Image 1 (cartoon, rainbow, N blue to C red):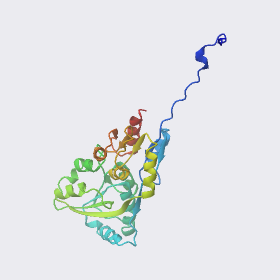
Image 2: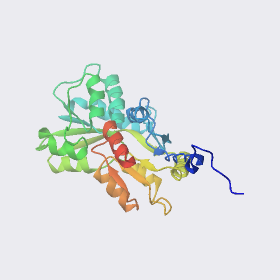
Image 3: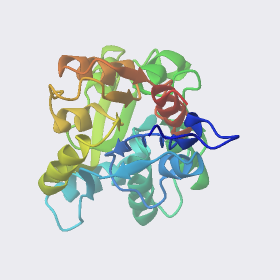
Image 4: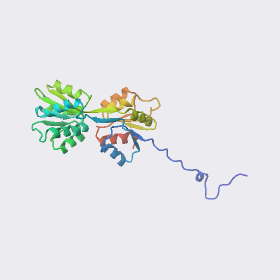
Amino acid sequence: MEAKIPQNKTAKDKTVPRKPVPRKPVLVVRPLRDQDAFLRLMDQAQINYQYQPIMRIEPVAETEPEAQLIKTAITQFSDFDHAIFISANAAELGVRWLDEYWPMLPVGIEIFAVGQQTAQILSAYGLEVSSPQRQPNTEGLLQEMEQLQDLQNKSVIIFRGGGGRTTLGETLESRGASVTYCELYRRMIEPDSLVEAQRLLEQSCCLVVHSGELIQAMGPARADSIDLQLVVPSDRVAEVSRKLGYSNIQVAANALPESMLQAVQIALGS
């Protein structure tokens, strides 16, 4: 006998609603920070993400041989015309060294920061800081800062991590400056953390990298991750990523937390 559908009911009523397929998480691999504004914004935006830092920042200890180079540069700080801080890490560590050897900082040195976060750290220390506004990166610093255009007979100290890019120093030297590097920390890839991040990448819809070093450490794009979205802070890092085989790349306006969050939201279509 043919089954009858009860009155006031339709066959469609018996259909169980399909649950939406949950989106895979975003993977963030930037180094661990005490207060990470980007991750805080990700939480506020209720974006599902996994955080697996693959790099650690290792300050140069005063007992290491490299510390003597830092001490020499710091004690000669008053001899420089300009001081440039490359990153938030360089600013945080740099002011500690300066505070130890200069209870009262010498006057007449122009202070520059590559990014706004770096500038904020230096300003909180009581320094008057100049930084690029339209393009908060090395290229912006070189283009926007009028004081860094003609550097004949000027001396510049650059606070940074070991093995950083040479673009800034080489350009300043081409403009006539004498450049000294004060390398305060090392960027160290953690092998075990890298393996875990590469495993998590298989379960992720989007990878966020804040530097070329991080995407190079993660390695070439996998054949099975053709749909993976990649968020990067600059055209330079995007170009590095393309050479590694990544194609779905969202370039943020800059590396600021708000800009990186916006790029993630665009990549996710939200």
